[in-house]
Picture 1 (tube, rainbow, N blue to C red):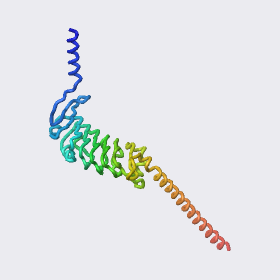
Picture 2 (spheres, helix red, strand yellow; picture 1 turned 120 degrees about the vertical axis):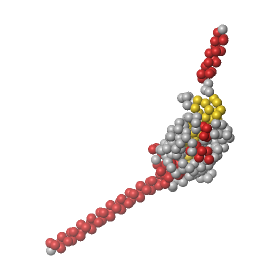
Picture 3 (cartoon, helix red, strand yellow; picture 1 turned 135 degrees about the horizontal axis):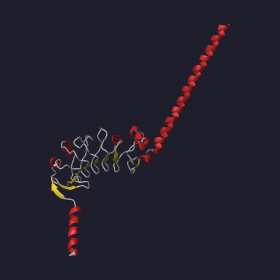
Picture 4 (cartoon, one colour; picture 1 turned 180 degrees about the vertical axis):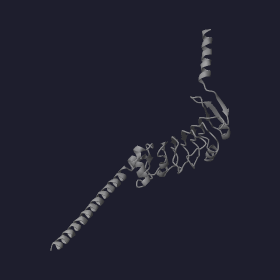
Length: 244
């Protein structure tokens, strides 16, 4: 009798603790910890319009060989409660904008392990974004991520230490949410932190700039001093002539 009660209790706990999972819209949908549904899609028959009616909090579209056309479909469909979007491990080559206007609650986007070669021109307003392990090479792409928490590792960024963009990223690193930026200094070089790769060149340039400013100030001061000295001499000469 006691064993029977134990089996009943275990069955009840299993029903309570295990979330309900069902297949809908070409995806497996289950409840998250806070009770909102999340979808994990591993199918070639994903119905985006159908998913928009599920009031999803999390949408996982990872590993489906999707290209940028999926972005157009997502941006033309309302996902009012969606907070987390996973587009990792696909074949997305281009992101036209960071604006996901149909997802007003969006908090994070995972675009890692895609084929992105550049970032949009508009600043990223999404609180968290992962663009690691793509094909980004131009460090100017990082400027639009300056005010957001972003993961950028695994991209073949080129360290052009004389570039104004790189200098800005170097000198303002402590004020940026972008951390641990890595780049390649030479073709055969391994990615290393920006602070290591460009430290010597940028610091030397800043020292040279400071020396130039000091030299200019000295020259300016000497010019002013010479001007007043000449005026003083002229004044003395005029005064002497007047006395005579």
